[in-house]
Image 1 (cartoon, rainbow, N blue to C red):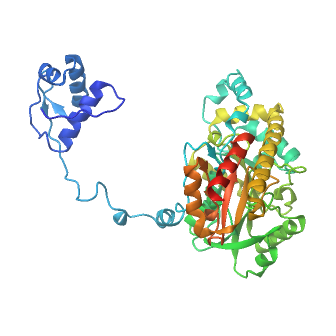
Image 2: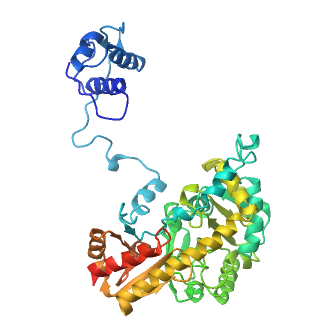
Image 3: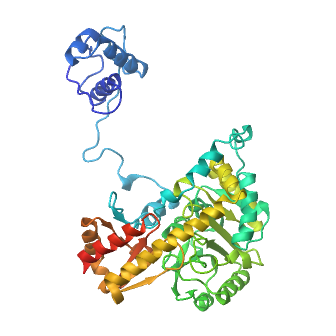
Length: 480
């Protein structure tokens, strides 16, 4: 019998059954064909008879063999459909998608940056400092009796674990200046879920949503996929220009902003513009989605007060995440909602994934309540400040006034513009850097129109100071 045994990590009997199954489905073994006895096939394949018997039993259980008597079964009647030439599946053009599906596949997945795995000096943005994570404290809380209590064994509430929401309420008051009620806080599985749920609740097809230019595509993509007409307003050295916002006469449903640490430039929106933005939202009956990513990681002065802290008319939807402060793998973020959106948001959350994993929530609640989280943040700020200084000084040493850095006082990245290179040089620069072991990432995906200068995002949280200096030295050796 001409059967090829696939190479895989599966047990031998599984690989033999998979090989026979492939032969049946491809038509090499027709319906009614007699298979060799277990003794004969075992001798042919040079395996034990028991192994072949197990393979036959598996195939019989799945309905591929009949008359199985542990000796010589036959192939069951199996309809084999010939694959269409040139395609193993239905062509994309013939798939009937909803308007949402068409927008999603056509617009929201185009601009993911190319990653460079296994590079020694990888300046990828968003890469966490795994060594900084408080693993011992996390392990201690995770194994404690309090965490493994019976109340965590059932289904959790859509709003999130009450102890974590209570801890966050107190923490947000201390750290972000936000005074809110417990009911306003909802735990979500990452900030991306928050943006998606907000878009589902607020967006009608062809309604207008404003985003900053440049901006984080992940926050804008759910609104575009939901059918919104995206309007992009450029930022300046003080963030979003409110006068440009006022000049827009169209009805605007929502605006997405990063006022405490604009992404990717790092500029901070001053108080006058914040209050003007809140006034505009109230008068225009528009919602403000505040993306408060990495705002706790500030290296000069105290963290900037959140826009939600100034919200007197309940128009701000505040989104915070632990992906930049702890680990993205935790998939924990939170939303502070206006009162009018609590009910609809909870209904959408329950429909989306019912509730966020409770174990991580309970450990994080312990971390915040005991003060470990804020102590960790202070240590992380101190370490990242040294990494930032190493990056800024290395860029200055090797490139001098050929580069302009922005966003150096907060967050976990720098936006670096090469004044003597254009956007046409970006791909070549990335390729040269990669060959020397340096991961370089273009900032172009965050702009609607490709910037004139060669711009890059330099993430530094996952690298040591020595790695940063060596990485910039290597980069300079291939670019200068």
